[in-house]
Length: 219
Image (cartoon, one colour):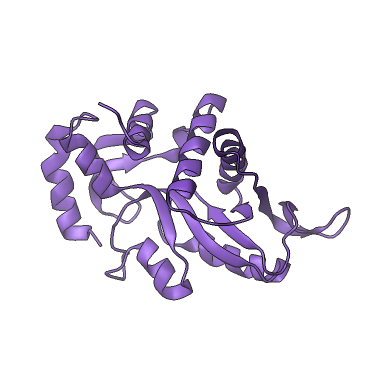
């Protein structure tokens, strides 16, 4: 069976202990039958493959941009590895940069390290997951301070498709409603459920609980 990049990514997450199944109490207090821990990406081999999946998502969705922006700190290696993969696998050369936590007032100075942003430039934000949209809210004023850029989109690894604590919208849906920014994910929670149903990954014993969780908290 020839797997598409979304299915390959789901297998990749499971194989590397990033996606696990069981019973987990989330920070929100919700009890979920699955858990995503992107902190388990910690080797060069993992990072190289991760960049390839981000690059495929950008190409698959025809997201046009000139520079990848990685919000510090988790977004920094993601921006770098995605830029490398875009060139290596798709011959698409893009700039990349990431924000400083504090403005540097000496040397080259500025808020960003890497590509210096210019007015009219199209940027693509890359982040691991979106729980509350905090990283996006913090990044937009920094981008505006650097230059009048256009945010072509944001790419994350997994869209949980889950309601926020105080809204019927997911963090991804709220980002579009509040800022008009489309968030693209390599996979969604529905993709993961489908991968179990199709036997791409194990976990059939958790299907009912996952569907029940989606029926209660899904957005």
